[in-house]
Length: 497
Image (cartoon, rainbow, N blue to C red; front, side, top):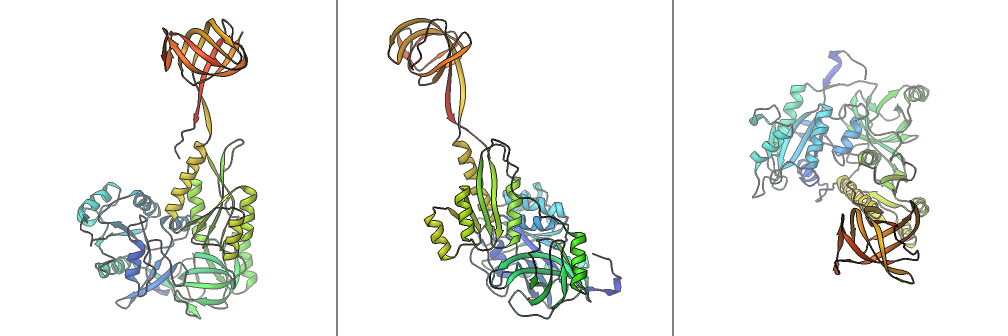
């Protein structure tokens, strides 16, 4: 974004993102902050789903970005846009630092964003904030009272305590940063959410960072252009214009822009198109590169909005896929369609649905075609279940494990399709019920199994190196003296995904 003279800049509201572990109370904390309810569940939702909203405290506004998690926030930030000014890291007072807390800390450190810690659930009897602070210090976040420079606030979303302290701290950090923006046209900012409204068309949530955005403005990102036909705030109220730090839902893009892209306004559609052509880029490929012969789990990925989709695609790419790859046959934002069902049938795929669902008729069609639709409200849970399914699929593969060899010294009895033979174990070990291959003059001539082992006329479970044993062999190929038997077992593959 271009530089402007300092005297053209005015104070703007700080933009805040709230991140942390999945069940540590992010949504309930947001709910306590807001002047209306979102949900009682941690999964979150919003009256007007635009991905952001504003609150007012002591006459000053604060904008909160309501992403599905730190994964979505990092996906936005990866496109080079400065999305938020401040991050609130939520940690449960009774549980402390969890794997997702560490992931959120990594995201904070990578972006270099100013952070304030909210130790939540202080109403719990087992709350231990000092223990939490110690764990945070080990993870790279040292609070002020532990000798660091990260402010910390104790909160209870249930009892609504500490909320004022948190908002006060956010405004203090904003004042210290001197957060400012330009308050005259043209406008520019960041795309923080996009989705397809089946009745209206392509909808985008724009966060204005500089300038004044108005209806009828021509807008462009590197991937989409349009003219703003309608603009609403997070409560669904129609607006004529939006100022810096204000999130608005707009209608008018000809195609769906990507989350995290910078948008700019232009005097006419031709100038907007020139910018998009000059700055344009292709959408990155999703899913893993499947190697020839590699096993894969086929999925269709549908989400409520594009921000969630991009975050999930990024996380799926990060899953180790040496043993089992994930092939995304189709992905998109919006409701599950009959075309998605047909693709699932032809590709033998499961549908992973994040905060979206099919219409009743489409659901009946899916049931009729026996297509599995797995529903999720939390990104972390979707990824965990995907990993579990990958592990299950990979472990269905049967692998061979060679265990030992035996040289035949004597044939004791021969009947149709079975023999009792004796010999010496010359390599490894031989176990009961293992399978074998018969080699004569170094050439494979047959296969079979053994159902019993004897050593010194006693039944045993195994024979080890240099043991002389007798075995009960089953197979159509007749074993002869001096043959070499190679023994192996077949077992399910053990993988770590």
